[in-house]
Image (cartoon, rainbow, N blue to C red; front, side, top):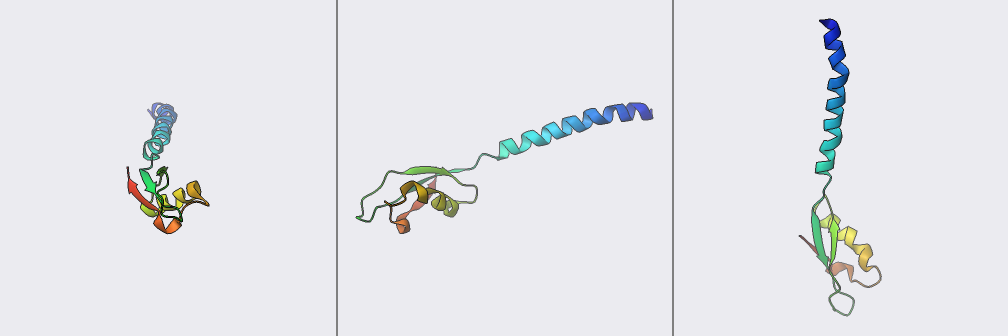
Length: 81
């Protein structure tokens, strides 16, 4: 009986590790945000879509490089899309 238990142990560990490896892949998808901004003259710039797990503030920070040198960073606003 002990040998049957020990023989099944590696198979159980392999199945468990495979399930754990697939679980983070489903959770890895971050929500997307659409961010808008204005330039220094008040003209609207093209919207940018970014992924951010930690909310709109992180999305705002991720969108900044897209408009670097063009956007007034105080006008960046992100909404879930």
